[in-house]
Image (cartoon, rainbow, N blue to C red; front, side, top):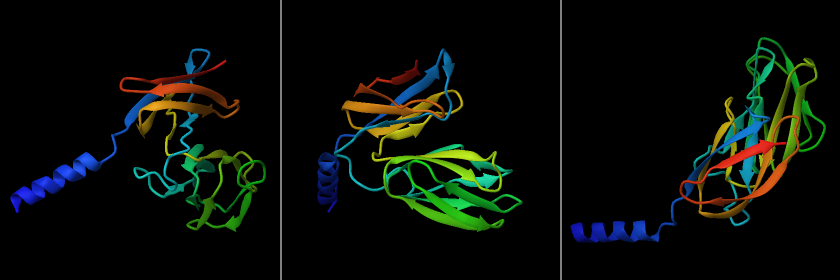
Length: 192
């Protein structure tokens, strides 16, 4: 029995696809890091659906008259929860670009859910509080990340190869280029 189990384990390990590479990178503009930039790789052969290392849903919270996070990146097919964890009513909407929606007026403690089924950028606002703004960017790839406050990001578990990359930042144009993913490689994005 011990031989059979060891043999089965060897078959399972050998039959697995080669592991991906975590690709670190940075985003910047005129020598300064860019927070909240979204970077993604085209992956036409990737499996559809949520990435195995990411939950199938996402959250755009409302608290202290602010959306959190300010920039949310998700994969096509993700359902986003919009909880109202504030002390007032909100009316969340997006009428331009990407997914157009209006969630209607809802009170403290309520949660609305909305599926995002196609790629694009949605600018999100509140009808009651005009200073509230956020961005939802929906991508059709499992290889994406949002830069932290120091402009750092990591694209998780990317198979080695050459990819077309895209990078977007609030107030900026989408940049597109090519990158080779291999051990030790990084991806540094700079807006002109």
